[in-house]
Structures are given as C-alpha cells and as structure tokens.
Length: 423
Ligand SMILES: *[C@@H]1O[C@H](CO)[C@@H](O)[C@H](O)[C@H]1NC(C)=O
Image 1: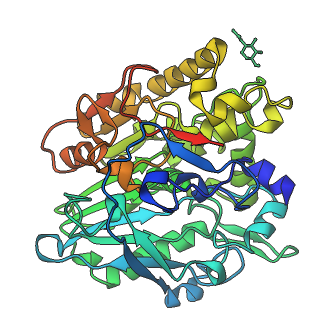
Image 2: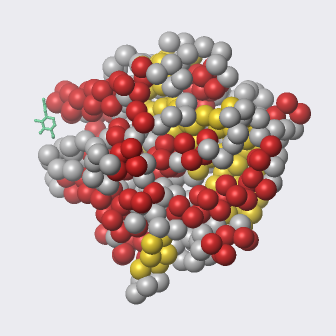
C-alpha cells in the first residue's frame, strides 16, 4: 500500500477547503486515497472569511454504460464504465460540455491491481452521485457560460488517461481506456450529443491530458458546422528533471504507456517522430492538435511539484517537505528551481500560443485543477490574470469574444492565487 502511494505521488489527500466547507478537491483526484495519513490541506491562501457560504451543489447520478461490455470497454476490473449527465435547456439544449475525470495513472501490475479496489479502477466503488461545481455547475452565478448546457462527467477507471488498450491475464487486469472513451462517446451521441451545435471537451489532470490526446478525435465526431473546442485543465505535465536530476514523471509515464498499450492510440504525428513515452507528454502533442485548444494551468502546478519534481524518492531527506507543502517556506534556491520549471512551461507553449485559435491561462499559483472548483473557477475572489478570471477567460476564448493568451508575471507577483497549502 505504501509502495503504491509512493509510486503515484505520495501526497494524496482529501482536500477540505476551509471556506467552502468539506468540498472534495484537487489532490483527491490523483491518487489512491489514504485519507488521514498524509498532509491534509488546511487552508487556502488569502483567507476569505467573508465569502458567502455557497449553496448546496447539484448532485448528479451515475449512469453505467450498459452497451460497453460488448466492445470490451470496461474498467480495470472488468466492470462497466460510467458517467454523470445533467441535461441542458433553452439556449444550452444543443450544447455539450464533456469533462473527463482525472485521478493519476497506474504504471505497474501491482498498482493497477490495487486500483481495481478503488473507484479509479472499478465502478463497484464509484460514488453513485457527484456534485457538479465550477465549470459543471447548473447555476448562472457559478458558471455563466455553460450552466444550461448538457454537462457530463465521464468517470475515469482505466488508469491511462482513457488511452490504453491491452490487459494482463495473470493479474486479471484489462486496460481499455481507449474503448471506454469510444463507448462513452457513442452513448452520449445516442443521448442527443449527435445534434450538438456546440461542444467542449474538457478534463482536469489525467483527464486534462486525455482531453489533449482525444481532442481531434472528439472534433471528428461532429460535422464541420458544429463548434468544437477542447480545454485542458492542469494537464500540462512536463517532461522535467526532478530535484535529484532524475526523470520521475518520464519513468512513470513510460510504465503507463508500456504496461497499458497506449502507443497505438497516440497521435501518429508524434509517434512517427518520437518515442511513445514522449508522445504521452503534452509538450510534444499540443502543436499538432488541429482543434482549438485552451490550456489552463498553474505555472507552479502543485501536483507536479509534489509528485514529479520533489517526490520523496527524489528527495530522500525531505529537504523539500516544507517548500512543497507551503510555497511561503521555499528558500531562494528552491524558488529558483520553480522559476526554471515555469520557464520550461512557457517554452513548452510557445509555438502553441502563436495560433490565434488557441487559448492560454497560466497563472503563477501553487494550484491544480482550477476549473472544477468553484472558488477558482468563478467566485468573487477567484484568481485573475490581467484582471480576468478563469471562467471569463475560458468563455471569451470559447465564444470568440476576445483572444485569451494570459501568462502571469512570475511568483510572487500574483496576490489573487488560491494556493494549496498542506499541513
Ligand atoms: C535551500 O534548501 C535546500 C534544501 O534544504 C538546501 O540544500 C539549500 O542549500 C538551501 N539554499 C539556500 C540558499 O538556503
């Protein structure tokens, strides 16, 4: 158990944001959960005691995809995949927002076998209903551009960003991410998405990576007359060197790609030029995505700092512990390391951002998944870049109201961040 947690990034916590009660957030999405063990988020920066208590979130029931079994589109343990759909109405009746759930990856037989016993690998353990907040909210005051769209959260139970295909008989594991993606699309098309006039594929974290990988496939489901775009939230995982000079994330991704047979489902434009593991990194994909794409990411992505830059395996003495749990406790050389990471992120998006159809919001915060949480997506004190928040930026780009290429000044200039701080 401990080993699995370490492999996946040892910080796995249920994030209880003080101000919004006991909402489940960001890091909870990543990893195998062991609730009390590791740091629990204690607060967000900028204490906002004055924020109104948000009204009860909409709860949306889980639907299993009954037809999925016939194509073998099943979770790691062979159970049916699922999704949560809340119908749109009026001007949003023919508009579809699809969100691919995140939650890390499994890269070894051992941690995939463990994952089968969780909601990230089996629908047996999935919540029967989920709150729809942030971009998924049904309230205009919480998601002004998408509240009356058809909104769908597709559950993640394959462990390879909806992209694997294969299995391991001895371990009774099936890797069917790509088939789950296809089965979910087929199901939603039959539920009305076929008639969509507008569609947006989104996702956070492992789901944000999936939304990049599947963006053009999604586009191709619709006729040319349909407006189709993709949003990747916290999906910009960089092939970066960790604090010990190693390649923690590349090693993890190599395991995922190899174990789960991901290669055949990655874009040929990349596979023809690079090794398969490189083609699981967005930096090698985004320039070739033909569909308009928006990258929303914290420049000091809290998950990447915790799990890929300074995981315990790369920092055996824990000299990064203070810094990675609270940015205010980083010393000058650690900040320098993080600035270098931000610079790598900026160079990764340079060509991508030249295209007028693409959008960008890279804020200088220690955050992760800013579209799913109400406080970061759209609230009175949400993070801003050049005076504009996340929801407005994504809306402006989607509806072509104005171009959005928001790159924040470097830390510590931004005082609108909702930084994640861990105990
Ligand atoms: C910052 O902290 C690290 C880890 O404890 C240490 O190795 C480094 O020397 C420190 N740098 C400065 C400038 O204090």
